[in-house]
Length: 423
Image (cartoon, rainbow, N blue to C red; front, side, top):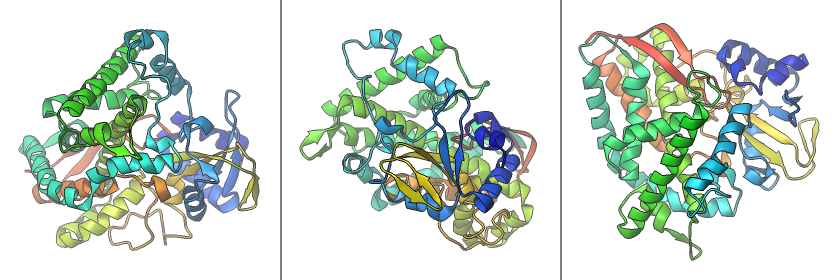
């Protein structure tokens, strides 16, 4: 494979053509599954890890491969994400919060290694316990029914804003214990955080500063309220749970708050959107679900494999180690391409077919090991309920017109999709 193709993987625009990206990954899995990829603009370069088993190995060995921000964290830093980071740490934002001292070194658990990661995860884990999710299920279904009722009789809708973004952001407000009126701000802040590489979503510096300062102030105010009057919600857990006799620092709390906004919204939104698109593009698979609704649970796993709502995560080698036939040096970055691992020919028969009856290994879309997405089951429940209710009401739904994807090599996100239906 030529150098240009490998280099392109670090560029968000490359992933606008997913067929072309899958061709790159297929060749890498076949010819060079642990492949060195230089970066443009004088970047450090990275190892592309494209096989399922290798991704699992790296993911379950945090003593060898770090997620910690001090070693490089879990994402590429593009020109736009550097811009947002500099703004959030810059003088204008610091001036607004000079007396709060929260912007210096906050980390979220996704960018921590054990044992610190384990302690932070314990603070949030009770919010996603099986019992709590069971209690939430009726609310998820009712919210989904209400959302679909809003589009009933219209014949078509812009699906992202009407449905797939609405359900997870409503549930996030529920989990935070805040009013539904406040969900629009949560969604706005999420888009600011994840949309920096997309020219349609990118905002100028002044608006970015305003959004970030609003987010930080909101998080701090909510923390204060939950300290004074704790409730049965995720923010109360973050604000009041002690691990080894210590509360979470304000720095880390704000970072955890931001992580929950993005993780609690984006992956579910992307799974719902991508699942509806896949079922529209493969009507024979949708018909199987109409004839046998019991297949929906199985279909959910296939949808998440197919969609890969998160495209990759990154790690940094903590020591020299051999992976495959390559010698990884201490300090080297590794990119775990979930998008590629979910199409590994050694794990699935005909992995480029969408098959709702497929039985195979667990997809990699929610990560693996100690960083397995803490809200993965909540995401599955929301996707399951949405597909069930959508098929009940609009069994002939069809995506028409251009599907517009967010420009990103980290999140596989649709930003505009028109869906037509009867009923």
